[in-house]
Image (tube, rainbow, N blue to C red; front, side, top):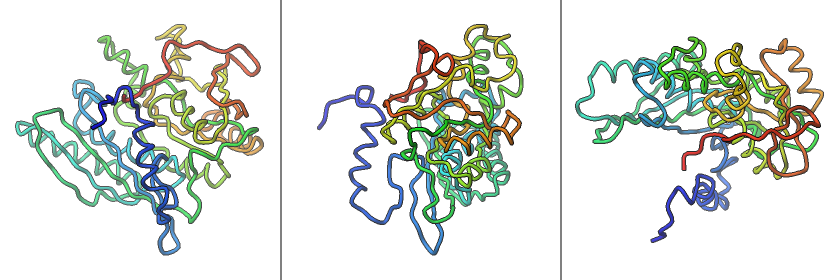
Length: 324
């Protein structure tokens, strides 16, 4: 038995074993290691993804209602389909909780997931409930669809592309910091943390526009950008002065706004690499609020955060969230 601990092995190496197992099987159009797995059937590309929330790791019930826990459980899973440029169609859920959990808590979590799925045009089709002596855990699997050969993958970024993101960054991380400090965050920030909305429509728009690569920002801009860079064998250069920060961020966190936006995580916005003219046109048509150009793709591998285009590099104390 291999004695290495997960903390030393890391997520990337763990997934690499799965990638190796599936690499020789031609039934998958997109296998392990991307935001979702994809296969083609009956003239349609089908996708499946799964995500789990563990209490005290991914959520705290003192910061959100059980209904909001359900919203987050669905949103975190469906966000992976948004990153492929696909829609969400069906979901199933596994809820694992202690025997002394109140029935009302379970029903409220279920109601949150049902409401979120309905909002996204999908159905919650079933699932399972089990018991544990450990923390409350929710695992959501979502199935979606898109055009054959149309899935936007992590590994398609090309040197010369511009890097764009949807929405604004840093709100979820800012809300968590305020809540942990006993302070009340602006409600839109708290909602970003406890009930993220997957950018399904935006993902399909970016796919249709010709995005070469895309992912969702769950673990932080820098961590998720690094996944795109690694999968694409290229580099992503990001510009701090172009990041679309949540309003009033400097008021609450003077001097820390860029850190929260670049490394905070849980924004569940999308990062896409697109041909330059396309990215600029999308940013212009969105009025500067929906889609923002935040960097470019280079031949030099890795991710760098610069103060501005051609400016000095920004040193941050943290790069983002990692499970192991």
